[in-house]
Image 1 (cartoon, helix red, strand yellow):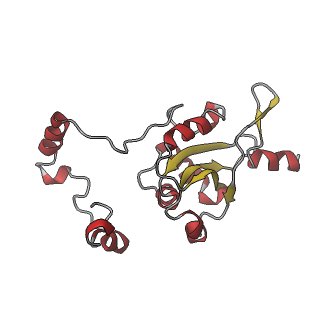
Image 2 (cartoon, rainbow, N blue to C red):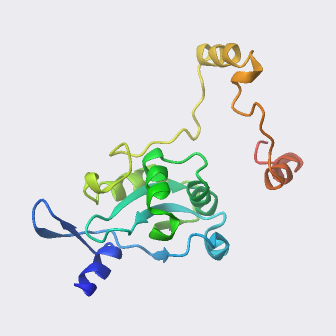
Image 3 (spheres, rainbow, N blue to C red):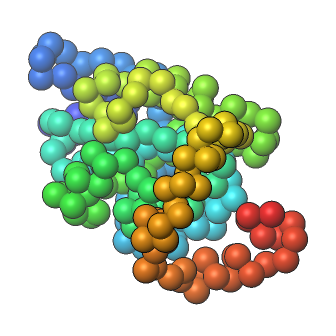
Length: 192
């Protein structure tokens, strides 16, 4: 039983209680990070590296669930999930319920070529798992990268933010890390 659970945790096989059978999974992680409290441990591996990842809840070996995502900077995106910033709400509720000690990060794909369309690869990874075992809301990945708002949408946002208390940053301040990034000149600034 222990070796079967280990196989489940490594995503080689998935067990389904509904069908009482074992399904072969074609996606095997390249790397697994277990201690998510010490996220600085995987900073050197994943900072400014793009790819597809899974955040896996290993609390109940018979009911393993995960969130699958992609990013041009795996370290910062996974950190967003760990800290609860701009993250999937199902995943965040699960982290709150089971605590971060019961989660692992699986790296399914790594790339250094910016021309690679990560959402296509993310969709393939999502579709490799039974959808009921995922925290994801959609079976196909999408991205807002490169999206341009219409003039009508821009007018609506301006009207909404005319009242300053409606702004998402109202009453908040940037931390030292964000201020250091924002203060960089020209092309070094992420908002440039």
